[in-house]
Structures are given as C-alpha cells and as structure tokens.
Image (cartoon, rainbow, N blue to C red):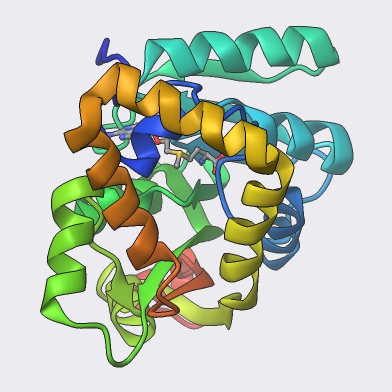
Length: 264
Ligand SMILES: C[S@@+](CC[C@H](N)C(=O)[O-])C[C@H]1O[C@@H](n2cnc3c(N)ncnc32)[C@H](O)[C@@H]1O
C-alpha cells in the first residue's frame, strides 16, 4: 500500500487536498451527484461498495447512512484516510477506509457488488484503474463514475494547461464510453451533468464570499508564491471556460453466463 501525502502543488486539486478550500464533497454537485450515481448503480441496503479515491469520506459515509450500503473507501493519501475515518466515527457509521493506490486495490476478484470513482479517474491511469474496478466487482455488478469531459471546441492549449497544472486528462464523452466498452462493460449509460459545473464554480465563490476569496488568494501566495497563484488562476480559467463538461458514466460487468458465452 502507498503512504503518500496529499497533493501539495499550485493547482485547484492542491487547494482541495491540502484543505485550503474547506470542502467535504470534492466534486461538482456534491451529494446530489453521488445520490444519482448510487441509484444508477442500484445501490441499496447491504450492497458491498468500493469507493475508489474516497477523499474526505463524505460520499462513503453518505452511502452507508442513506442507502444502508456496506462501503469500503480507499485513497492513496494517509491524511485523507485519517480524515475520512474520523468522519465515520463522528457520524457513527460503519465504513472502513484504507490507504491504497487505485491502480492496485488490494482485494480479491469479484469482492464487491459495485465500484465507484468520483471525480478522480481523469488524473489517474484511466484504463488501468477501470480494469481494476472491473476485476474486484462480481459479474453482473456495476462500475460507476463521474468526471470531467472535454466538449467540442476545446483547444490543445487548454488540454495542455489542465494536464500540466492539474495532471488531469479528461476524455470526450464518447471517449469515456469507449473506455468503458474497452474494459468489457455493457449496458453503458452516460448522463450529461455539465450544468452543475458552472454552478459549482459560482457557488464555491459565493460560499467563500469576497473576503474569503481574498484570504484564499493570500494563502495561495504565502504557500506557493506569485507563480503558484498564476497557475491556479490559469487552471480556474479553463474550468470556467465552458469547454469542460461533467458526466456520470455507468456500466455493468457481464454476468458469468455472458462472459462464458453460455445461455442463461
Ligand atoms: C478530487 S478528490 C475526489 C475525492 C472524492 N472521490 C470526492 O469526490 O469527494 C481526489 C482524491 O483522489 C485521491 N487520489 C489521487 N490519486 C490517487 C490514487 N492513485 N489512488 C487512490 N487515491 C488517489 C486524492 O487523495 C483525493 O482524495
């Protein structure tokens, strides 16, 4: 298992992972998006769920408390895992969090009914992580995620900026579908949630207020210097450009009979 620290370089992800942006749900639409993902993955009481890159544990605790799911969260950051475990204790929900890399989750094949990954796949080795999610889910189970996607008109310059500053490489919506197909999944559905992206940016700004935004700018300069502030600004511009969409993608691992080419 990895023992990595949270991302601490000048980027929006750095703001989130260092706790400089005091958010609990680290994705657009917050728990509303998580609820929709859970419904699409048919999560219900007793469903065994793996939450890949579980962050502060907000979604995992929510799925346990509101859906009665049995959730295990993994994150590569010890800090995040400790924060998530503390949240589960405070909320008195039975959710386990362990430090592990999304690319090599330490679980047997077919251990879970559902594996989800929220707002993280685009900065990981997508095909590898997806294939591991498929491996640990039982035949007939669901793989679900939501993430950024590039809309038509996004230039190479914007893609490079996001890759350089955030290490994020979103697919197009069609690209995400192809990745799911390539991982052997079926019954794939994509739901465009782009409207929540712009709301997320403006609501986060509103929540901070003018004074909060100024304080944040000062904190960024103190931590990462003026060069760092410029990087965060450039990244924020790409996020606000309207060229980044947001989508939920869900697919199903073929049932055993289908995998062996047999009749049910
Ligand atoms: C944008 S946050 C999303 C957190 C959570 N899924 C959510 O939506 O609130 C990204 C998370 O991915 C974790 N992460 C990044 N790389 C990872 C990896 N290779 N394996 C596991 N977790 C990773 C980070 O520590 C962080 O908690």
